[in-house]
Image 1 (cartoon, rainbow, N blue to C red):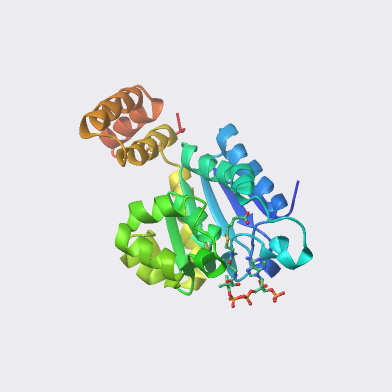
Image 2 (image 1 turned 45 degrees about the vertical axis):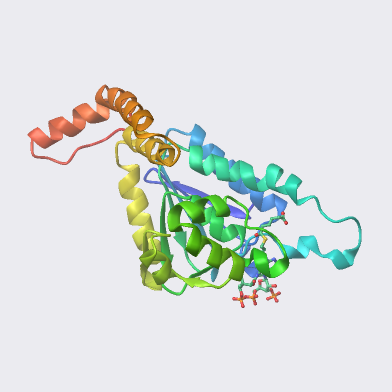
Length: 262
Ligand code: T3D
């Protein structure tokens, strides 16, 4: 168990806290693997019904630990294709394929892959003081961790290109205005608000929420006909679920539903 990612499970919410604050939670191999173990647990453990991802200290995540990429130390140039395949991309895939909501609380600067991991999450809240930086252009790299994909989908080409080519910081409130994240909140309120949101999602109809996530993610590449078919198939499954029966019963009995996630 590595302390580079702290994992706690309470009220159905698995909170994963990136925990290398003196390096602004930048990624080394140990932190990649610890994060992967956290998201794998979220996939495997039925008691986990939502995930909250955040960072310890004043930053959310500064992307790759560049101390591990120092060319002055000599040796051949690193094979960054290998590190993306081996360390970054498995985590991106685990976040997107998890059929449970992933809330991200961006507590401070999110740079490089740190920003793009946040954009892969389902609902992103950020402290008003937080900023997002596509730092790659500053060091001669291309955006990774799904950044070219998520920025383009969330913002369109014009804003995606400008952010990626200039590496200009984007403040949280503007990111929210642009639809890149869900909302910017007062710094002092971020963790409480994100935790309350994750708890309410964890108390929700997990099966239906998971399929909703799958449907929305598929919409970008499906035709309308394909999407209508997929909605039909998912609704058929949802309609047979215990949570649907509970939801309708609770409505008719004028009480709050108690969803079990199945
Ligand atoms: O390599 C591969 O596997 C390919 C994958 C690449 C994915 C990527 O993410 S590439 C992009 C890498 N990230 C960056 O280029 C961002 C580098 N960091 C910064 O530009 C700035 O630190 C920030 C804009 C994020 C924050 O600035 P500021 O002024 O608030 O803080 P700071 O003073 O720069 O940083 C505080 C400390 O964290 C400092 O350490 P010190 O001097 O107190 O001992 C700084 O060196 C350290 N730190 C920040 N970012 C990184 C880092 N250490 C290592 N790697 C970092 N990325």
